[in-house]
Image 1: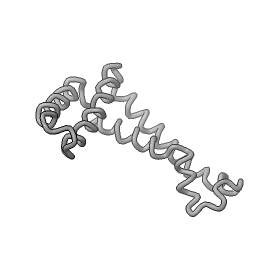
Image 2: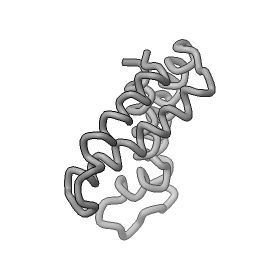
Image 3: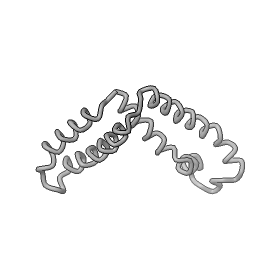
Length: 112
């Protein structure tokens, strides 16, 4: 599992390497996004989550995704998304599937 120190070292390395570049540089923008992500991870790690808790959270989020997929038929039969080009895409957006997948990816990153 990653530690707060590991994250802060990666932030420092990115800032040292890419932040002296011009503000509009593509690599700097990419580094800024990565630093923002890493700062969020560091803030989470400062709360001291245990590895078992993170694994349980990943499992809960995966079960939530399965539940969302299973409920699509009911949602569609209720007439939601009618007239849309791709009602499944509308459903996923309404249920926040992208946010859940991002949370799973972030937690998996922290476990590596």
